[in-house]
Amino acid sequence: MRAVIQRVSAASVVVNGGEPRTIGPGLVILLGVRDGEDGTIIPKLAAKCANLRIFDDAQGKLNCSATELGLSALVVSNFTLYGDTSRGNRPSFIRAAKGEAAENLYNAFLTELGTQPLKEIQHGEFGANMQVSLTNDGPVTIMIDTDEWKK
Image 1 (tube, rainbow, N blue to C red):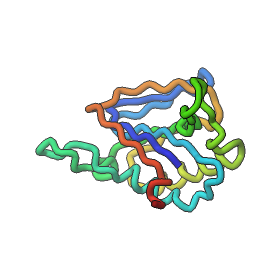
Image 2 (image 1 turned 90 degrees about the horizontal axis):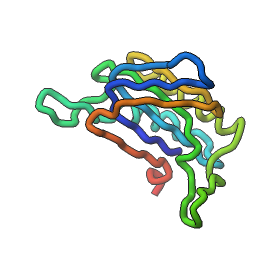
Image 3 (image 1 turned 90 degrees about the vertical axis):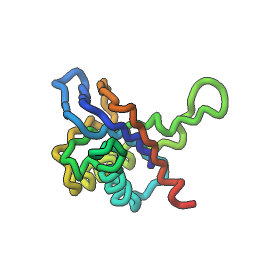
């Protein structure tokens, strides 16, 4: 799985032209699921995202997490995180999980993230047309590729 985590002062997602789903300070997590993923890494990934120490402490050092500060998270599925640009100019998405398998793992991640002590969790909808707006605070952006954890 791949996750792009951004520290934000505010963010929202609009799904299929509906009402915005918004958060204040916290995390935006763009989540991509790799083809063949079995989901065993989901608990570790959810805990890692929620507990990343990417928020300033009293001395201005990145030493606090969203859970410690009682902040929120906005999660959006993003198969394009598995775009392969090694050949040509049109990305290939062959490594991205498809359909029901990917949706089940995305939903499992949302469930697992819900066990973390965050203020609230908002999310997009798998496979929907979404517009994401955010104010990246810092900017602070972290990329996690769980395949690297297996090396």
